[in-house]
Length: 264
Image 1 (cartoon, helix red, strand yellow):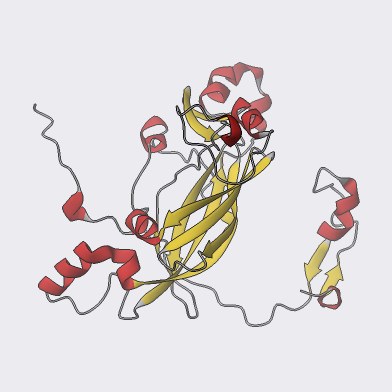
Image 2 (cartoon, rainbow, N blue to C red):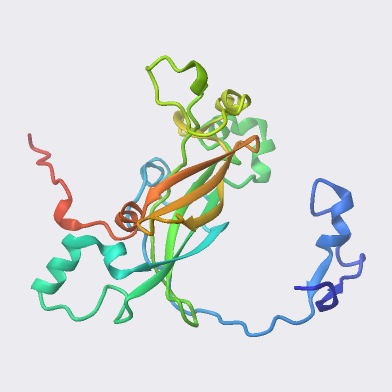
């Protein structure tokens, strides 16, 4: 939106600083004058394709903020890329003429993030145990897929996952014990490991803060994507991810699930 399409809000209405840097406040104190062609979906969000341990650790409550935002978008995925050969073959064998989302052969895919939101009770010294179990400002990501036409209904979303650390090994001093990162080694990479994702006294091999800022199809190889993300607001990283892997996260194949007998 260009500046002429904004209308400044009176300071009497927004008298509370909205960002850490007060110099940014004048930019935050603006409302959109015109929004153009807006489409709103009335559909209920689909359930995640898988659930995580936070559902077990914190039953009945949202550990992470339910409102997902940010991230990067969008790449067009065909039905074959999303569903894979196995699901497509089973659908064909069962005589299904439509895809799980309808009869159009593609969806747009993006990546969003969410986090444990800070709340006032974090300042309550009597709740130290709760704070330890559910530390705030810890990030996770998810993938979502939606129709490529209005009203852009969301057709699938993955469960939460985290994006990993860069390998701390300098490629010029690799000792063979770990595969070095490609490209120029960032000397600040080891510093990102000082803060890891933690929940319920469990520590994961992921940065506390990690969220996607770019998501594109790889040039010269349409079967792969390139995801760019930041690690603990310190260093950036690019990773290649196959479209088939993203499709598997959105539409897991039930025929490949391993069911274990709990009686054994």
